[in-house]
Amino acid sequence: MSSQDVSIITAPDLTGRRHEFVLREDRVGHYDEFRAFFVRTFDLYQIGLSEPGYLRAPSGMEYAVIFLGRSGEPFPAGVELFALPEALEPLNDASVDRDLWAIMGWMIDGVGPPWTREDLETTGRVYRVPAAM
Amino acid sequence: MTIPEPASGLPAEAREAWPYRPRYATVNGWRMHYVDEGEGHPILLLHGNPTWGYLWSDVIPTLVAAGHRVIVPDQIGFGLSEKPTHEQAHSLDGHASNLVALVRHLDLERLTVVCHDWGGPTGLAMALHEAARVRALVIMSTWAWPRPPAEFHTRIFPWRMMHAPLVGPYLLGNHAALAGRGTYLSVVGREKFRAEAQSVYEDVLPDPATRLLTWTWPRWIPLDDSARAIARFEWLEQGLSTTTWPTMIIWGREDEVFDADTFANRFKQMLPHAEGPHMVTGRHFLQEDSGAEIGVLVRDFLAKQDA
Image (cartoon, rainbow over all chains, first blue to last red; front, side, top):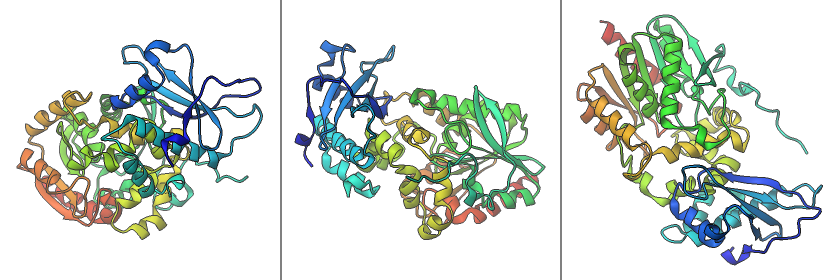
């Protein structure tokens, strides 16, 4: 899987869709290069909290990337990912899991060295993450 | 669609090895589960990440039979204790303070503090803060100095990657990597562990949100001078180095995370009066491989203090 499998998209039409929470990171600046990646990728110093970012993952599912601020900490302090399915359609959990793994890879590619996709994928295999096997 | 029965309390497979009455104390507003067995001078057994009091299940009977009062809390965020649901609810000082609150609540005196993994920084900080209550220390597979804990902790693969932003909640949260396979990889007798104990650790962390501390604790390990816990670890190292409490060091021969050459020997340098290190069969979770032997070591060590 390559980083091209995940793409940034413009704000989709959300009519008839819901935000389904799938992952939360309370401390995206734990390693500051991750926070810097999101700032750079979503132009957050211009956009701030005014609108989410949006991604399309390999399954075709679109995801909202919601940034969180916390007083006294560099922005963004946290990130939440929400799937955007049709309003009453349940998620396909296995498909979402593969999407999240692809988003992890896309993020690591964007953060760049010394963080590498190879290390991510090896870590995933060691811990037997299905999407990494 | 079928799902397992929710783990509303003690996992069924743990009940035989863990026949103890659950007790609860409120510490800093959180509900802390602990067991309190036997009578005599108290011994506090402290677990770390991602375990709970069950880690000591093979140690407790020997100590109770020897005439000790054994208190085993589950750190807030683990085991049968309350599990906060956002990362900022956890701090190193907060967890140490939780233990201070517990020993004050129980008014423990002549206390032996037995610590493992994060039970070290939290329990040793509590011991220094409540020094008048402490009788002795037993230290295993942990650390008490600023940095680096080990070369392992400086590497991206696998350590930093495991708890990296978003990767931590995905890998350790959604996929229980530390509570599941991570613990399995850190024992010597893996098949026995898989058959008898692994589910006991996994079942008390049934959902991603309940596993929050498994990726939050690693983020408190200082890796550079700007780390948020650096001052606390400096205080801990300095304070511990001046203690004269009877101390015993126990280590796993096969521990490749907190390897004995680095960690046990550094504790011995800090505390040259300490007994040991006693080497037992074990990786990081040495209690799973040598719990009964550890119980005997602690029993005999304390008997010598009474002689």
